[in-house]
Length: 336
DNA sequence: CGTATTTGACCATT
DNA sequence: AATGGTCAAATACG
Image 1: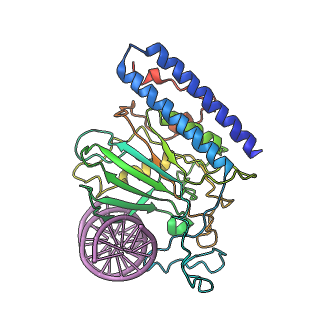
Image 2: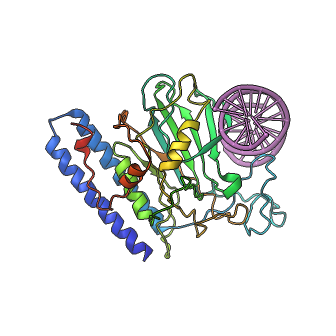
């Protein structure tokens, strides 16, 4: 069932690509920007599809949670996680060739600040983040901010992200996501209509929203194709078009997204993303290690400042999110 | 007053 | 030893 749907999705993606190529063909010789945009789009979708295929083939729950310093918050006693280090049993010698690093899927994103001016934060991804650290990175001109999901303690959402400003382009930010959100930040009272969020749907939304993004997924586990794979491993994003409300006088790093969070939270549809296995819904923090899945998406957002005709409430917006998976991504709307 | 951010120190991994 | 990631106390913010 899963793989079937996934396969279908891939087919859809490919069709999408085809369509985009078609558009590109038409616009060749026209606006270079548009062409560029289209190529980016194509690349994005292609990469995504590839990633999906790869992931569908091999679905490995990379255990081995990476424990940080002094983090005694969660000791996973009941988790049968084979920790290579703490196991006192068999480690007389270090195996000569240990696996390089645990397989982590990474998704890195390069986002532009929406405004283009100085104190612009990167576009928010529709989730609430709490900053827990900042570090100077060698070779990088700007520090890297560390964020974790606000609901980590309450819901055990393990999603984290890192934000770092590009060395030379103050308007660009590198956002590295790892882990998926397992939290349910529904908020906004009105629980009138529960939308059956499907990964598929989320994927589609991603596609649509990320028009102009260059998503580069790097999964480094080319192991044997396993069966029983599922497509829930798909990353998701949603950049709210309303990202221009950064309060003045704040650093992009100092204030990640406080004001946006509320908004983002409100217009964030109840998408539940199963981390690795089936820990959807509420996640028990220390029980489901599920996976130290790190996802880093690499995207390149063009400077679409999303002027957005000031949508007021979240309602219309949320509704707007409910497009069907037949994405008729109309890029032309972006370039009149 | 509660919550989020700041910042130095700690720890793990390279 | 160096680098990167996280914690946690203190502080700022609403």
